[in-house]
Length: 319
Ligand code: 8YV
Image (cartoon, rainbow, N blue to C red; front, side, top):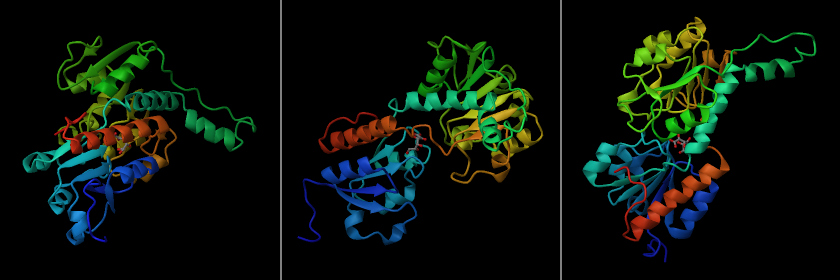
């Protein structure tokens, strides 16, 4: 009967676009109401307001407003490891559980960081462009590049992804050092407590820390200057961690050598100044965007939802 809720298929909200596999698997289990990321939350119909769970992409997250608009909400299954777009304090106060997708995407995000490092240091994208433009065939020789082997590689944020990046680069690095809120007792790499000293001692700085209020603009003009004119910055974490205006200025003025960026302060907007630069390599937030990781992330979201509705412990709770 129209309007009747099938008790075996609890109502949930799919918030913003997910992916076809996720959509199909959610539809098999739940009564799914798709809500656009920019929907008018004050105008949600009663059957949507009855949702007991919300599934959301990392870039959309879950604000206090969407939590308040869904009075029956019990849990949020986030389709990302980063939960900087989820108001976790509000969720905690309201007793709403939140899950994310750690581990399953670590290898692919770390691979992208390493790829960005090589692509940036070896000018691979600019060289690709000049070859395609016919410059090589016309006898033009590209400028010589820097090198990766032997460089001091600084990892900012030694979480799961930071460790996977360090492990990958260890065989070629001159040294791996890291800066974190605190020293990791089990990490074999050198800890540098002071962020400026850390940047000064790094030839390459790879940002792998979590986003959120604690890390906003952690990489600022002073840190970029400490990295120095031969320094390269790679960011696969969140655009918010870097002062993007300071980065554009440092690149424009040659105060750092280059940058490989997968994330930006105001995605999908990328500053035109960065787009115009040959010494940067840009990706449209592709860290976890492999078929393998996205499938595993979807399965983990589903496993958390299944656990919740079966009254079992959540697999990867944040709240
Ligand atoms: C995604 C991510 O690009 O997991 C994260 O934190 O940044 C990526 O996996 C996206 O947010 C998926 O929702």
